[in-house]
Length: 60
Image (cartoon, rainbow, N blue to C red; front, side, top):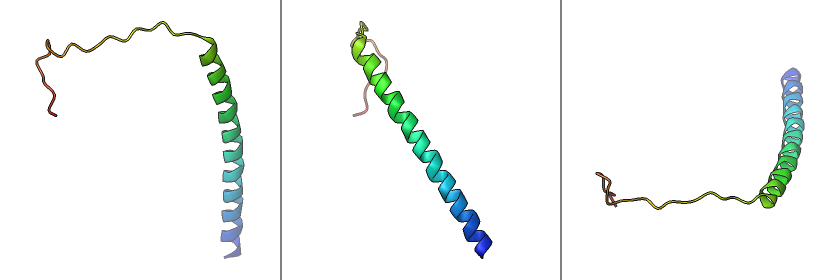
């Protein structure tokens, strides 16, 4: 029983440690991605769908 709880606590501690490092890297990556997105401008065009030429119609 003691062995089970020892292994369980070690695994929970390792999981918490991995989560801290993972969330730390995610926050740094999110900040740098947000910074890059604000610096660059997008010239992509959005075209409307041509529903009249389609053989299929919307169900709803």
